[in-house]
Length: 425
Image (cartoon, rainbow, N blue to C red; front, top):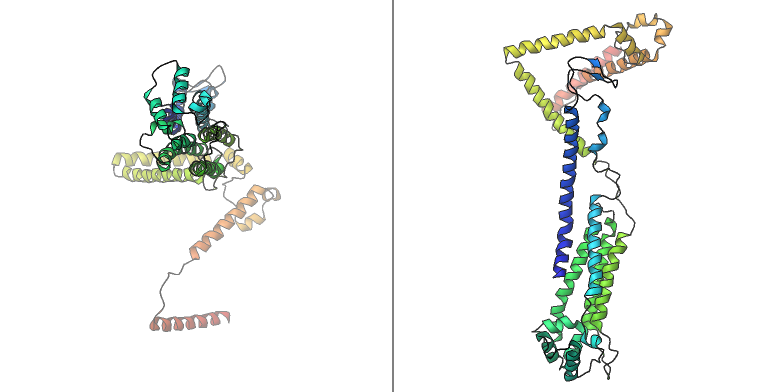
């Protein structure tokens, strides 16, 4: 029963922890957002513009007295440079459960063996073996499974099967009578443990764990140990001495070796160095692509809204009045001398340049200004590009010309050659 619960925890544990951690992060983010909104809503309201005590400029709108009071770090629940990520925590929990289970299995649930427990030879007769068991248990009646075991141990082959496949196989497999029957009964039970071990190795080398490159070696070690154990159990020779003492209990030895491997292999994998694959250079473009698509949809919606406003006379008048007001304000700002001076100082001047003839007669100080020279050069480059775009006429693709089209093209090319010659003369 403990193995069943252990298997369930190993299989379902990582997914359950991941779901719980996702819910926890979303809950913390929502709480942080709600806390910020509460700070914004709990700010004092003012009826007019005035200077607050802490030096902030308050207006009639609802805003905090000190905008820096809202800590932006509360929005980052999980720092991006955190070493122990939630996935690594989940893997660490699975590794801890696995290690505790293997240690408890070795200490509190070792393989049962009546010969080593009673310290009697393997060749001891069944009657003496029954007497030893009854004397050790202080009872006159034996359990049914021990009665069934003693009945089977009357055969020498059954004792060899006991050494090879262990106490549980000989006691619980009632239909097993040959080496093949015991092998078919033994392989699925042991293979389940190796499958569980391979699943744990796969979880420890999952994407994002930093152990991705060790996955093939970890799985290969599990498969190799499984094949070695199956081969040993199926093909080894059982040698029983004449006196029956110092007989090698192969099942018990293999059981301990298997559990030691299950205990050491995950720990070795855990302490191997972390390696992360380099990120793709196109990865940052994925969120940008989503933002661009959203922006395109918003622009289309804005275009449709502007078109729809022209269908209503009231909205059309309000829109015209708004844009006329904006044009007047923009014209007033552009004509402001202070704005022109500041734009020229920053190299963003927009004042009209003098003609080429007058530019030669301008003052040396004005033409020595790098901002003015850069503006003149940029406007010349833009004018040249626009002229080239206007004069460029791409030829439309077409198929192979017919005979008539070829003759017409030849005649036209001849006429153009005459015109060029006349112009050159």
